[in-house]
Image 1 (tube, one colour):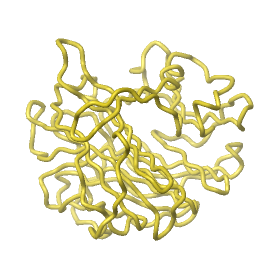
Image 2 (cartoon, rainbow, N blue to C red):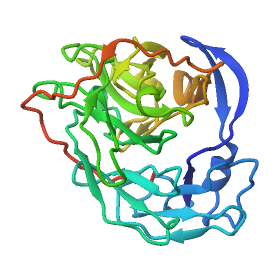
Image 3 (spheres, helix red, strand yellow):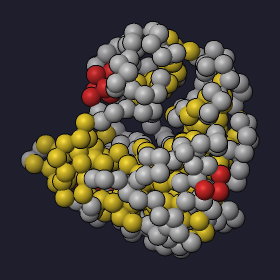
Length: 350
């Protein structure tokens, strides 16, 4: 069973020189759980701070096994972990509101971002609700990426969901990072374009990871989004250049800072190949310390040494400041976008 926890403590190693100072991180808990075929009876309290995990049933022998319906694994603290059966979904990220309600935004196989909830700690689950349809452009160069959602919660219980979407670009030539916020436990606000640059730019943005300061909320919510991008989307497997960027808001996503480059540039040949294309990772994470900086955890590749890839997880030394700015988010999408098309090949376990 592959278990992905919401909050894991990482071991920082020596910094390396990329665009900014980055520390390599090793997730010992995840490595330990990947090698076991059952959920652990008890989770060490010093290694995990959120007792809610998303698990995909997979064979222990290989992570490239056929995809199977996920389950949620929950624990009331020190008690044994148990599996509960939520509604069927593809890829999801649970968040917990201050009142204890669990919200689970997810990407459905039909090309929608949807959400479901539990108000009794996972004993029962309510019906799914629509967050938004998805319009998605497949990145050039055969890169493995999808419109997988990244979710976070603020101090008042508002959920933030980010994904990559091409609805703001006529003809769907490239993606932007978009964001929707919950207006209640069952309703969601309009999809807004995060203004990394102009919608007419040559860039393509994908695989966002959103983080929110849980001591902030509403019009003063501090939000940071890390993402991957091609500066020039018109590229091939041999010419595409992959970078990592970051952008922040201090007013709940109404306006944003100037975007900054965190890492890169990477060649696609520096990434391992899979049946679904070159892959750095299906999703990333950003965490925002209360009143402090953002700490994304991101895979970064360097030139291989012979046949050995040099791809590891890093986090910026000291974090990234959330400065906010005057770049306004956009809520009126362009017409004529293409609908999301599920991948033609079977999904692997995540």
